[in-house]
Amino acid sequence: MIWRVVHWVGRLGLGALFLYAGYTKLRSPFLFEMAVDGYQLLPAGTVIVVARVLPWLEVVLGLWLLAGWKLRYSATFMASLLGFFVVVMGVTYARGIEADCGCFGLGEPITPVTLTRDSLLFALAVFLAIYAWRREATGSTAAPPLPERSVS
Image (cartoon, rainbow, N blue to C red; front, side, top):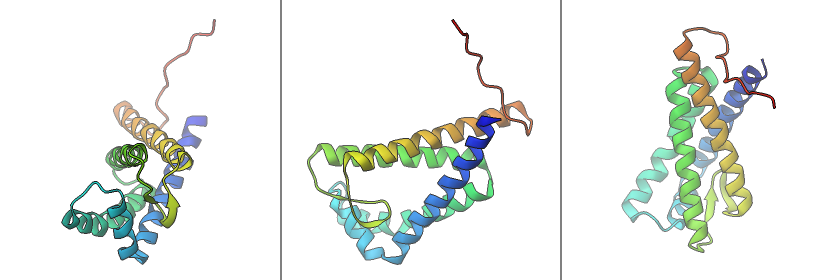
Protein backbone atom coordinates (compact mmCIF):
# COMPACT_ATOMS: atom_id res chain seq x y z
CA MET A 1 0.00 0.00 0.00
CA ILE A 2 2.79 2.44 0.89
CA TRP A 3 4.50 1.83 -2.48
CA ARG A 4 1.28 2.64 -4.26
CA VAL A 5 1.05 5.96 -2.41
CA VAL A 6 4.71 6.75 -3.17
CA HIS A 7 4.02 5.87 -6.81
CA TRP A 8 0.99 8.17 -7.09
CA VAL A 9 2.52 11.07 -5.19
CA GLY A 10 5.81 10.70 -7.05
CA ARG A 11 4.13 10.44 -10.42
CA LEU A 12 1.91 13.46 -9.89
CA GLY A 13 4.71 15.46 -8.23
CA LEU A 14 7.30 14.78 -10.95
CA GLY A 15 4.72 15.36 -13.66
CA ALA A 16 3.74 18.73 -12.21
CA LEU A 17 7.38 19.64 -11.62
CA PHE A 18 8.35 18.88 -15.22
CA LEU A 19 5.31 20.77 -16.48
CA TYR A 20 6.31 23.80 -14.39
CA ALA A 21 9.99 23.55 -15.37
CA GLY A 22 9.10 23.45 -19.07
CA TYR A 23 6.68 26.34 -18.66
CA THR A 24 9.26 28.59 -16.99
CA LYS A 25 11.72 27.89 -19.81
CA LEU A 26 9.10 28.58 -22.48
CA ARG A 27 8.32 31.94 -20.88
CA SER A 28 11.94 33.12 -21.32
CA PRO A 29 13.49 31.12 -24.16
CA PHE A 30 16.48 33.42 -24.63
CA LEU A 31 17.34 33.35 -20.93
CA PHE A 32 17.15 29.57 -20.98
CA GLU A 33 19.38 29.55 -24.04
CA MET A 34 21.93 31.56 -22.03
CA ALA A 35 21.69 29.03 -19.20
CA VAL A 36 22.33 26.11 -21.58
CA ASP A 37 25.26 28.00 -23.10
CA GLY A 38 26.64 28.63 -19.59
CA TYR A 39 27.40 24.92 -19.19
CA GLN A 40 30.06 25.35 -21.90
CA LEU A 41 29.48 21.86 -23.28
CA LEU A 42 27.76 22.44 -26.63
CA PRO A 43 28.51 24.36 -29.82
CA ALA A 44 26.37 27.46 -30.44
CA GLY A 45 24.06 25.83 -33.00
CA THR A 46 23.35 22.90 -30.72
CA VAL A 47 22.67 25.22 -27.77
CA ILE A 48 19.87 26.85 -29.74
CA VAL A 49 18.31 23.50 -30.68
CA VAL A 50 18.51 22.18 -27.11
CA ALA A 51 17.07 25.42 -25.70
CA ARG A 52 14.13 25.25 -28.12
CA VAL A 53 13.34 21.52 -27.82
CA LEU A 54 14.00 20.71 -24.14
CA PRO A 55 11.20 22.84 -22.63
CA TRP A 56 8.60 21.25 -24.92
CA LEU A 57 9.96 17.81 -24.11
CA GLU A 58 9.60 18.56 -20.39
CA VAL A 59 6.02 19.77 -20.86
CA VAL A 60 5.07 16.66 -22.84
CA LEU A 61 6.74 14.32 -20.33
CA GLY A 62 5.03 16.14 -17.47
CA LEU A 63 1.63 15.77 -19.12
CA TRP A 64 2.25 12.10 -19.91
CA LEU A 65 3.25 11.42 -16.32
CA LEU A 66 0.24 13.30 -14.94
CA ALA A 67 -2.08 11.39 -17.26
CA GLY A 68 -0.36 8.07 -16.60
CA TRP A 69 -0.15 7.47 -20.36
CA LYS A 70 2.47 4.91 -21.44
CA LEU A 71 3.86 5.11 -17.92
CA ARG A 72 6.60 2.54 -18.48
CA TYR A 73 8.09 4.59 -21.29
CA SER A 74 7.44 8.08 -19.95
CA ALA A 75 8.87 7.24 -16.51
CA THR A 76 11.88 5.51 -18.05
CA PHE A 77 12.56 8.44 -20.37
CA MET A 78 12.12 10.90 -17.51
CA ALA A 79 14.56 8.92 -15.35
CA SER A 80 17.06 8.88 -18.23
CA LEU A 81 16.66 12.61 -18.77
CA LEU A 82 17.07 13.39 -15.06
CA GLY A 83 20.12 11.13 -14.90
CA PHE A 84 21.60 13.00 -17.84
CA PHE A 85 20.86 16.35 -16.13
CA VAL A 86 22.59 15.21 -12.93
CA VAL A 87 25.67 14.05 -14.82
CA VAL A 88 25.90 17.26 -16.88
CA MET A 89 25.41 19.43 -13.79
CA GLY A 90 27.98 17.41 -11.84
CA VAL A 91 30.56 17.66 -14.62
CA THR A 92 29.98 21.40 -14.93
CA TYR A 93 30.27 21.88 -11.17
CA ALA A 94 33.42 19.72 -11.01
CA ARG A 95 35.01 21.78 -13.79
CA GLY A 96 34.55 24.87 -11.63
CA ILE A 97 32.20 26.59 -14.08
CA GLU A 98 29.77 28.90 -12.32
CA ALA A 99 26.79 28.08 -14.50
CA ASP A 100 23.14 28.65 -13.84
CA CYS A 101 21.20 25.42 -13.30
CA GLY A 102 18.45 26.53 -15.68
CA CYS A 103 16.10 24.07 -13.98
CA PHE A 104 13.35 26.59 -13.23
CA GLY A 105 14.53 29.65 -15.09
CA LEU A 106 17.56 31.78 -14.30
CA GLY A 107 18.95 32.70 -10.93
CA GLU A 108 19.78 29.28 -9.50
CA PRO A 109 23.49 28.44 -9.65
CA ILE A 110 24.69 24.83 -9.64
CA THR A 111 25.53 24.00 -6.05
CA PRO A 112 25.66 20.83 -3.95
CA VAL A 113 22.03 21.61 -3.02
CA THR A 114 20.83 21.59 -6.64
CA LEU A 115 22.86 18.45 -7.33
CA THR A 116 21.31 16.72 -4.31
CA ARG A 117 17.80 17.85 -5.25
CA ASP A 118 18.14 16.60 -8.82
CA SER A 119 19.72 13.34 -7.62
CA LEU A 120 16.71 12.72 -5.36
CA LEU A 121 14.35 13.50 -8.25
CA PHE A 122 16.36 11.05 -10.38
CA ALA A 123 15.99 8.36 -7.70
CA LEU A 124 12.24 8.97 -7.59
CA ALA A 125 12.01 8.73 -11.38
CA VAL A 126 13.97 5.46 -11.33
CA PHE A 127 11.54 4.11 -8.71
CA LEU A 128 8.58 5.12 -10.89
CA ALA A 129 10.10 3.44 -13.94
CA ILE A 130 10.88 0.21 -12.08
CA TYR A 131 7.43 0.21 -10.48
CA ALA A 132 5.75 0.72 -13.86
CA TRP A 133 7.74 -2.05 -15.56
CA ARG A 134 7.18 -4.51 -12.70
CA ARG A 135 3.49 -3.69 -12.58
CA GLU A 136 3.18 -4.28 -16.31
CA ALA A 137 5.09 -7.55 -16.05
CA THR A 138 2.64 -8.91 -13.47
CA GLY A 139 -0.26 -7.99 -15.75
CA SER A 140 -2.37 -6.67 -12.91
CA THR A 141 -3.57 -3.33 -11.67
CA ALA A 142 -2.47 -4.20 -8.15
CA ALA A 143 0.90 -3.14 -6.86
CA PRO A 144 3.66 -5.56 -7.83
CA PRO A 145 5.14 -7.63 -5.04
CA LEU A 146 8.39 -6.33 -3.66
CA PRO A 147 11.21 -8.70 -2.72
CA GLU A 148 10.96 -10.20 0.74
CA ARG A 149 13.47 -9.01 3.31
CA SER A 150 14.67 -11.42 5.90
CA VAL A 151 14.69 -10.10 9.43
CA SER A 152 17.70 -11.19 11.45
